[in-house]
View (cartoon, each protein chain N blue to C red):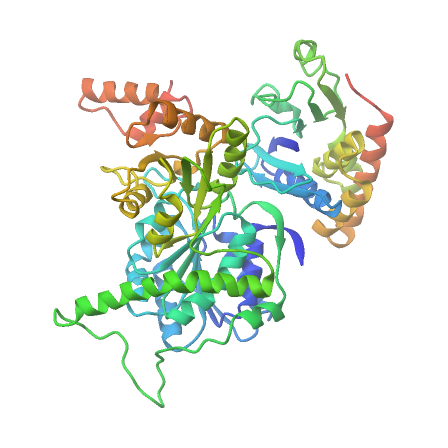
Length: 190
Length: 417
């Protein structure tokens, strides 16, 4: 089972990211469960959402406390919330940032966790370019699909168009396509 | 058709397929997505002959439905927490009058302290009002129970609450097989009321009844629940015949055969409990689980039949009878009286605290190896409690307890820690 925890801030589409992951997994014929952290969300406040993906029915209702994948949609959370809590030693981190690990203050952590793969890529900038809004979620989902192969590109596109009908969906598909190619051609493992 | 869909959206679709005629709802988290979706559907003309009334309160919502149901209209509402308490008088009246209203409860804690998260305090507060109460384990079952609830309510002329865990289910985005209109129409006949306000054939509903007949009327309400003990499994079977899946019933069993210890719970935590049972069985612990789907009526005989060979039943419940302990466990003890079975109460998941598989496994082992104090509070922060108790003992003006506790655990930004 893949267990994903998504960290971001209210207004950044964190819950939508979890739903897109689950919808794409569903279209790939997998079983998925997405749910928010049930806080009183406010714009700008730290928000968490979760997604589980498996090939058999998912029964657990507890929050994801031991993720094997982390999405960090807002790198300013790195030193505010314990985003790495419970992460698998062989985990994958999808980081929305243009900065290098040492600029993010992560060098020590990386040394201590040599098997964790961190992919840092500009998901917000890609959204800004295509949508005129720096919402990182679609790029994060596409980047994850590209890096892990856990979701097909087609299923991600389908989930996006289902969630955002019409022109917004088409533009988001462009975001996803660029994120997909960007991450696969920039294996940014730090 | 199978869809990846939010629980609230799925339930709204299911309610719409049941062809309600009057809905009156007041929004409150975490029920809001259900009633927003239904109001949009009515406005868009997607639910045939249906009126959606915006009301000033939950009390107004159910009062409107009492009138609508008495006029023979299929009636629906949804609420939670303080909203359910605010409609309490009408809750009792709807049942006392025998009006087959269906209401979703998106289960949530009751304040104070104010808390929007999940537990079962709200529907438990109304457990003796005379409504049937069915609890869903997942969103598929929430959908299925709503469809069964209309048939059950109208057959017995008794209101039904379908209880689904707030946020945990209402806001979970998961796979649900939504039925077709044809399937629902096959299963759910048009509403044929046993009493109706009809100008062509006038009756009065709501007589004052004195000591000469009140007990008899109450007994007949109880008798209706005894009939429900037979109707619930029958309707669940009829549902399975048409929809090709098992949903609802009085209770469900998971590895109960030859289990020495049984876990018993209501609602979504049963998913986590099943995972815990699998892990415990792998380690050689003879454990099983019972999901109580019908809480009202309480299926005492069915429960006794399933649990009579167990050495221990551990009731994990998301509620607290302050000053006594468990609510569900007390009823389980009554159902098992005369048997040597030990019944433990584990108070868990209050106000949205997560119940982890690891905690369930630990509590089973602790109960079997050392026994549990009665009641046992899962994951209680004794350090914070003891500091607060010390403070209260030391100074008269110790201040508001919730604020003190928040400071104790470092969440308050109001004052220096």
